[in-house]
Image (cartoon, rainbow, N blue to C red):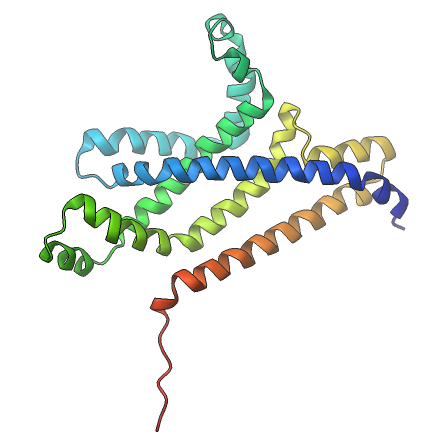
Length: 234
């Protein structure tokens, strides 16, 4: 049987953990979104010197586990005396900063490839029409390519945000008290796996369902011009 008193007692801690989870998700995805747009433009550049470094960055970040990246930054950099004596050490010894940095770089890599794929998928007719009107390349990117690509990338980007929300669970490995860490503490205190991890499962389900629904609404509004219109018969 479920011991509801354990859940009721732990609810304030779960609320604080949820606040940490959502804050980490928001600042990481927000920074990643800002960084990924110019990187995606560089990624589709015809010049190797421009797209090469971006490709290497996304290849490395997507090719290694997020947990390994977090340990490398939080635990690994501390082994170097030069790092400990540098001006960056006050930030790098902070679990909040390290988690934000790693999550931001990771989601930037995935989002860059998502946006780059959407840029490549832009119909050539749109570009030819823009060039025929005498638009410069900068104007084409600002008025045609980027708005169109960002709209088409919404379904994949929504999945990336949900995946990042799930990934915030590993922030507990560097002492951040998010909802998974709260569940583990409740389990250790009461030896009640259903009451501790069951609550977390419900929270993640509600968050996933809510985010998916929100992105569906945004997609419906952003891509409504692509939906076929129903033609009535007189």
